[in-house]
Image (cartoon, rainbow, N blue to C red; front, side, top):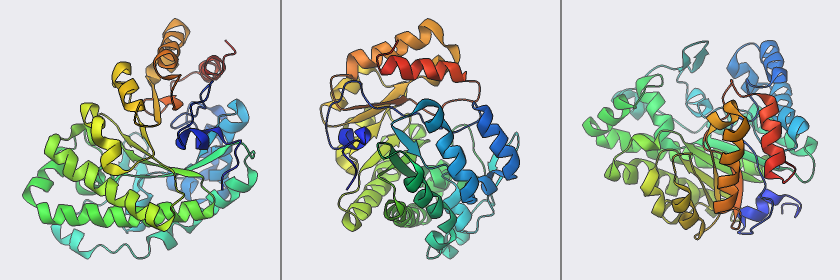
Length: 343
């Protein structure tokens, strides 16, 4: 069982804490000079993800600097297709790329060796739990099937994921097979992270916001519900955060339909709506990352608004998406101090 000093675990169990615990998505990243130094030593981005010495170091860096209440495993959502032999690579200035998959390729996919392939990531989790302060929650994660599938279909990121949407309309059975295979493989990967020492896990559906109502139900809700049911059937104590970026009003029933313990909110979610969602359970978010870049009054006002609207309920303070490389590390320090009442 998790140590009772791990405040994020307490919130995930429904407690309301003041001040709320906090961590930031992409808190280990290019805004930190120490991250850039480690990244240069590692070679490729995937080498950084798959080398426990480096992955542990960059995960710990923001904990040492800011004392966040959670450390999130340093990895990437695309290690799953990489483990499925889709030739994933990260090109500077172009982002992630991989061999695009077609209908026949989906039929040949095999997820049986994915967890074995990702043993270096699980070793990172084990080392992190040993090295983190006892009060720090360790979060594992993976991508949601829809978001991972969008990259597998197109072979790269696109502005509105039109290739995946078009493929889903033209080849519905193949696309459903892909989503459900990803759901099953990803659930097993999350269970392995929990067994290695993760206290809780987060499912990132970064492209949920491009889906229409029926598609959201079929591509974002159903596969994530399948994942969460699988994880909880294997590890009933598991705590799961589901983050469907851009989902808007569809978040109203997202927690109930997926079985998530907490839902992440992006910065476009109105705080009055967020407060309604919070009545059903813990929420996480949702500061605009640009406020961290701006600093000053913009940062202070954004923090204060969230605390005013959501601070009396079960809240994990976070950004509405990942911190950007342009963020000033001193602004992050101010954020931490203000959330904790020191500013």
